[in-house]
Length: 468
Image (cartoon, rainbow, N blue to C red; front, side):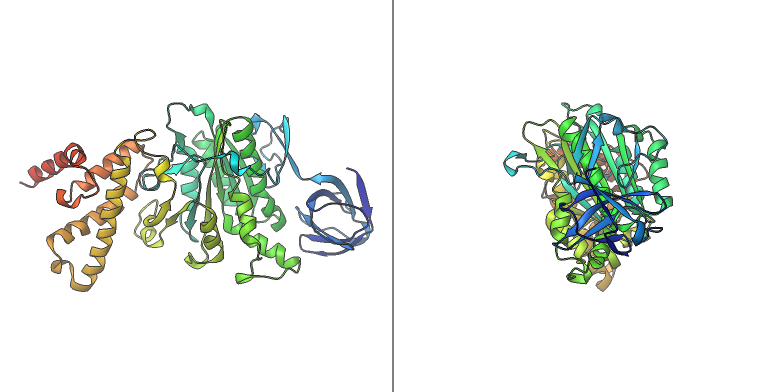
């Protein structure tokens, strides 16, 4: 702590403290706010001009009085003390241990804003992360170093899906071992029961020991919500680029983050843009998502799986819209599938992993994986068309092939997308081959004759014998 300001506070609005500028300080510098009650609160300088400065107080401002508020300035941005021992620990939204254990004995201190990665040093994401979710692993594969969001909606089971991915995610490549893989899980603006669900589930399934868990509650200040993903990603960067681990960062819910950004921006009096969000929301989100990636010459990688709930299920809303521009694809959850008890309710057709082709195939998964995925996607798209046609002319009015596609679509959702438990990639591929055996071989135009003969034709023969 270098400088202290007393009696400079002019007003308090929600989580923001406004002061006269009496000292030479910098934007984003860390501060400590001390009230008349003696309680200290962490904060940072959010805005500054020649006469005034705005402090984002990261804890409740109740009890602060203008006359006796003292602000101490650190003279440097917020930092996070890190060590390998952060794995297995639970932190609040600003990196303080809340699991009852001792503080982390820091080996290294890093700025939470992160250090930009030189574009020349970036390496293309490669290799496959197995999540245990068939609609991801088989149809929209997650690649190490990728940033892939999940677009959900209010009431859909994205929390359950996030925990299951954190529990079952693993590396497959023979050069990587289990000890090389770590999870950073951040709950942003989540209710208390959701936070306990995350903590309890990770402990129950034994995943907490390889996880650094950050929990920002809905009752915490909106300014703290803006820092939670930054603290979490700083931990992920340390584990990936310093400790050499392959890190999967799961952030949920980014919609809460964006809403907090809008609230704080409005409190500052900034001019709003679309739907009241600040005009810089795109660059702000990019400053988080672009922290994922691979660096040449560095063993570790950082992969992001961010979850956001689309307001009113509107994929054109500014939050998912801007996120889609920054990230490399999207996984979309379907309310219709959820109503039909399909879990996980992943809608395969609008979902996309743009880097999937770089992380699958003979080198990383299986030589038949790309062709099988493509054929399943094409067949399911045809089945959706058959459903539309059947809604007009009735199922009896469909051609025999269209009726087969109609049955395929139902089986695809109930037997492939829906899964009672986690599957390995081999089990997912086996389920895919079984489904394709129900279609005529002449329709399987995305598969080679050898693939049809090896994987589809024998199953089709068995089905025909069973019918006779």
